[in-house]
Length: 416
Ligand code: G6P
Image (cartoon, rainbow, N blue to C red; front, top):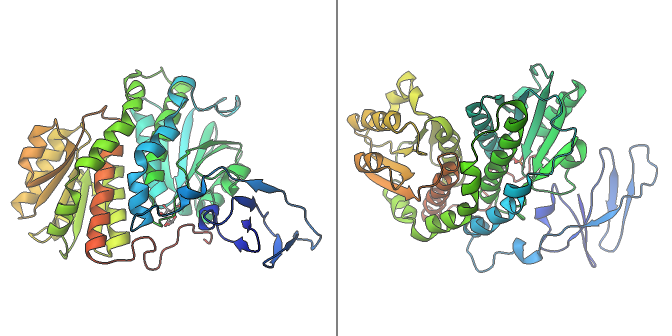
């Protein structure tokens, strides 16, 4: 993308990189070449002919892309979640996602394709759909293209906050060649995914500058809950609406987590260990995986996230008193989480439960806890994840890491 400024023009992989300086954007097409100078630019297409690409204005407020007094974008973006989630949800509980009429026509099953944090949101979406009887799978986009699964009557959903991740675009392209209807779930209006897919749902999280995705994950999860509900109401019987009604309470519940979190104190207590394990069951698995990803990418400490049931098939061999275990409980399968907690405690591992404060059995059996308000279990993943975002942030901050730009990582990965 090309950012068109006053006396300066910008080239970047995606809009957040320069939104602080200009809101005027030109979306280049594949094969375009742009010659950019401070005062002007010229674009030619892949044949070398001059190309006239429109200048579009993005509607992100410039202050949304500034640090606003915070030390790091990541912390600011974590704190913004009550507002960004409210934007994501606004009007959609009542009126839906405004999908085009054809998007769900003939759909019997769903395949999500995504990378990184977006893949964890996709896992949540697939889990939610399956809980309502709809066949759904989440695929790592880079692997999807290797052996693409059958796409008959399949809706392929590309989950990508930037809309520019090369592996996700490739998977969507493969799915398109195979005749699937493709829906983009993205944060960026005008992004490649939004342009290439048959239909798009915007997560409306506002610009995210920190390389480690935070508020966009929460908005993806909320959006995928709404999407899952719309798909399920076409494919199976409409699910009960209780979590839907509870969505309006989410921003306030996130605020409560942010205001009362003990994550800063806990983070310091568990630094410099051999490894950090994050466990979950059911819809707590994507949270555990995301918690571990966030932790490793910004602290550079070893972390692994996986379903609690897999402990006994390998990871248990690594559990000692120097492997703190973070056990995510979203309100379901509490008995199974509890037995996993006891299993690792027997090997000496300290356990921190991340759970609704009403789940007293879990909170009491653990050595420490990060609690969240009790909301519908389908929505608890968002709250427990906020605690893990804070944990990773404070741990990385204590270690003096480069939080907004972790080594070797990029915000938008536009190469395969
Ligand atoms: C990079 C970023 C991650 C992100 C992933 C997918 O690896 O560092 O934070 O989750 O890309 O990005 P996307 O824009 O497709 O959601």
